[in-house]
Image (cartoon, rainbow, N blue to C red):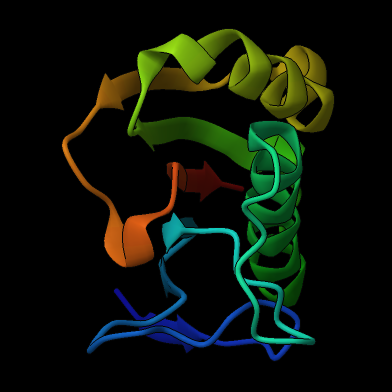
Length: 126
């Protein structure tokens, strides 16, 4: 099996010793994305909806760089600081994954990198 590092300037650079994504065979493993705007380097945290949109746009940029799309996602993991934001996150998330409805878990955590409110990772398969 071959392993390829996926990197795009259209998503934020990793803030630690990891890759934006790894393509292993026909499976793409996308690292957890937070709401960094890759153009400005700023975090988007003015609303949970805008934060979630930015996270999903970052995921989309990585998927596209690898030749994948949201329809190829089979599994997502969502980490949130406050499950009271679940409905708002879910509404935005749904506009990106559409009818594909990948398997998923949503977990409330005590803290996320850079004190963001939401982080999402995914696995996609062709």
